[in-house]
Length: 123
Image (cartoon, rainbow, N blue to C red; front, top):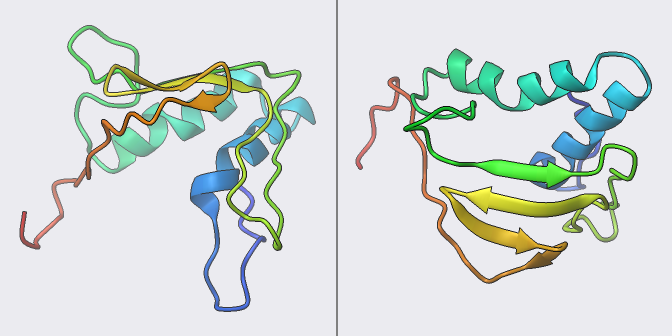
């Protein structure tokens, strides 16, 4: 289970910035295996939300991949400076396009909004 304790005075939180490194830290503390932590951040939510072609490295799936060093992973976000990259994340691909290379953003923005089958709003 990801930690959800960091919040701001306005009631918001920054799970997009820090929840995955924190989840990986749980695996380092032996609360779960690294494989289970990765599953909880990838195939499990994709399956639960019925989002097709996401969450696994399969032929024909969208290539959303994070390459990290599990021995160096560290959450750097704080209340004062919440939007900080995690240490130990070296490369990230979104839809097969590299957005983080050697820890630096490439300025590529290939992401798009993903909606599950329950979405009823406008497209």
